[in-house]
Image (cartoon, rainbow, N blue to C red; front, top):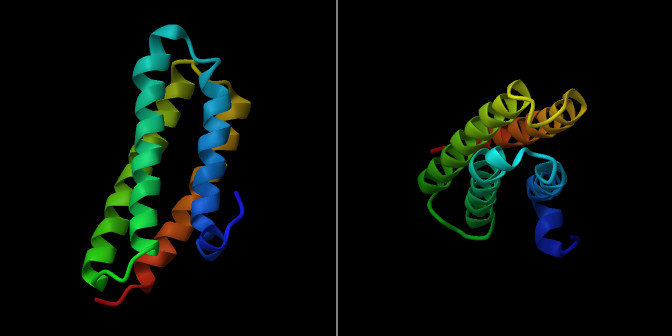
Length: 120
């Protein structure tokens, strides 16, 4: 995934990478969790990506941009919680949990910096 748009938004590359990594772990989820917890994580990751793309791809009002980024941040918080839950119920192993959590932390730092940079 290398095009001009994503190079201008490194956070998109990070979310894309997180999704790919999570998707590889999803295949190992117990069947009972794959279509509930796993699908919820996937869905919220894609929603977060959608919000980021909307903000990065348009010249919308700064207050609306900030609102969209805060919404993306709330999706990120939910994903973090669900990844922790996945680990706690043994749907993912410790190695997977650490790898995914590190990716989410990096995304969170980037998102937080972007939110703080918007003056409304």
